[in-house]
Amino acid sequence: MATTPKRRRSKGSGGIVKLPSGFYAFQYVDGNGIRRTKSLRTKNRAEAEAGARDFERAVQATDREEVILQAAKARQIIRSRDLPL
Image (tube, rainbow, N blue to C red):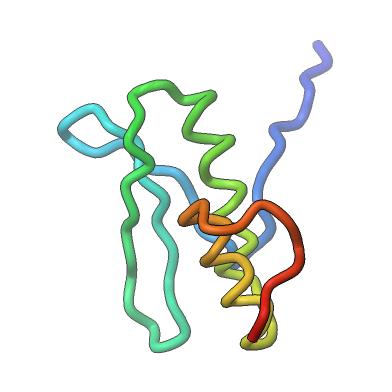
């Protein structure tokens, strides 16, 4: 019996957890080694997967400009890649 492999996030990019309240959250370990949990404010797994993609990019950012850009996108401050620094 052939099975299809699950799509998974790359190592170190965090994961989705279900909170006791029924809501999904994105959980990751920051640069200081502290486990952080950010609520995705949804009880639907598919919506949580879509919301977690934005946080995953922010967690894996390599330089300061990329972190600022991803944070602004996550907060829906900007719509394009142009961000004055």
